[in-house]
Image 1 (cartoon, rainbow, N blue to C red):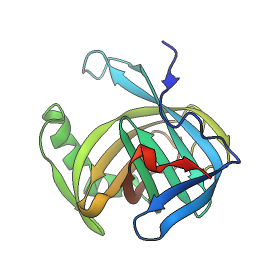
Image 2 (image 1 turned 135 degrees about the vertical axis):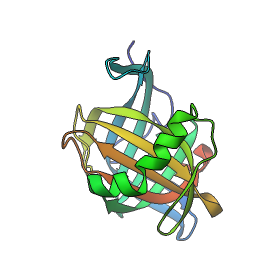
Image 3 (image 1 turned 180 degrees about the vertical axis):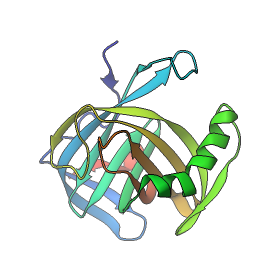
Image 4 (image 1 turned 90 degrees about the vertical axis):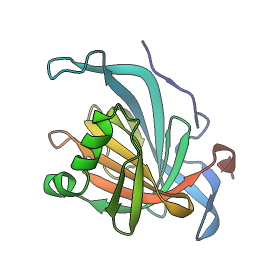
Length: 186
């Protein structure tokens, strides 16, 4: 199944877009790069079952001002803080909570603390970088990783990217949830 980008498909590298920042106000920013993520899943949950594309593809856009605009399902994130992480950081701060969420078939309400807030896990999963265009902070074609998407008070958001085998920079992005209709061409 060939993945189809359903949201933000009209945004191109080199163009300007307008979007609201909950603290800085209305921003007009340049799109410096685009990352396409393929969502992965296992048909059978087992260590031997391969991870394969679901057919869903989502976009991330590297913006001037060192921000990442990311779409995943019906969520839109404007992420403006990037904390590089080690595997030990992920094991300490994130893995136990992701495991608890996974064991509930992603139905439990799971909270965890990570500066500067308390977060509720909304989604976990696995992805593969399908393509990279222009400048990006850390994405490499073909890289595979796990993610955690979490929300906090006042439309705050956290996105964890945990790459396998050095395929990218493990990091926690922190920013805000946006509405799709608030993202417009300049």
